[in-house]
Image 1 (cartoon, rainbow, N blue to C red):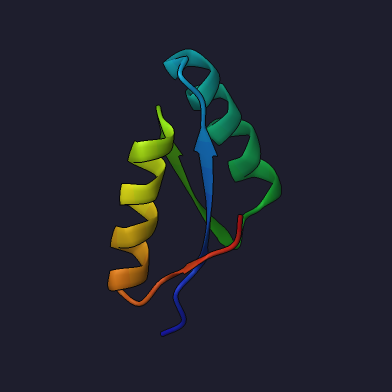
Image 2 (image 1 turned 90 degrees about the vertical axis):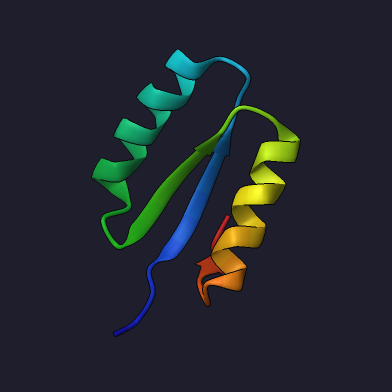
Amino acid sequence: MTNKLTIICVDDERNILLMLRNQLMHFFLDCKIEIAESGDEALEVIEEILSNGGDVAL
C-alpha cells in the first residue's frame, strides 16, 4: 500500500483552516490534508507523518 502525500495548512484562525482543508480535499483527491494552528504544531505534524513513513508534499 502506498502512503498518500500530505499537504499541511497552517493558520491561526481555525475557521479558515477548516474551509481551506475542505476546498483542498476537492482538488487534491490523492493527498491527505492536515491542519495546524501554529508553526510549532505544523512541525509536530510533519515529524509524526515522517516517523510513520509518510511523505509531506507541501
